[in-house]
Image (cartoon, rainbow, N blue to C red; front, side):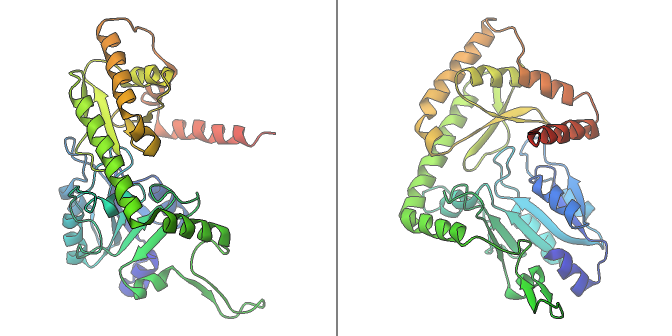
Length: 331
């Protein structure tokens, strides 16, 4: 959408996006698909938010879009959307806020009693917001939302062809056909849960994340990345290989998501895991006590895989990932 807007309004033929390294990899995928250049900027090593000085320096005559997260997938941190909005307004470019993970948590956080920085269309400069209904909207997989600040901008998403022999063709999105069952399932889910239900679940999920975060911060050998806002809390260890910690937690039934650049793992608070947050905290405390006592010496598979990935070029890692997908297609 912003590619076509940049072409029509500003005459940009080599469009660029500026986003932090923590932006979802779907942006890399989209840029690759649509012939755009994605400029990754670093994040502050303490806050894990996009480095705004780096964002400023990356903007140029080909920039059509800034992108920020509310919240990001790796660390559950919200970028400074207000600062990004000011830059977008100053340079007359778009600003997309990725709320796919934050989704209904950030939307209902304030009504649930949790104050968040502004991130939506109340921020001058925000032109588009994405939100996954299939995450914390609890709708069926395959449903998601893209919102635009104006109808005029939304029109740049459409594809129209008036001279096709098969008739006049117009499509609002990349998908030519969408199953009605998905839309009905999403609508039915939202009607069933309702506003009060989403407020209740936001309070439950965010409250659980805060409890887990405090427990992690109370363990001397662990530290939390940034200031997580909703459901995800990422952490690392000052003394031990965090991937070994993850493997030990896996043995107890907790499958944490592995992170890299920098190393870490994250816990995601969902309705089931929020209900079991006390058990998670207890298991993590026991595992870290075992590490401190020297009872755990072996390295697990996660540590081996990410240790290997850190020593070879990213292109090689990508080839291995491609080979894994190939294996899934074998009969």
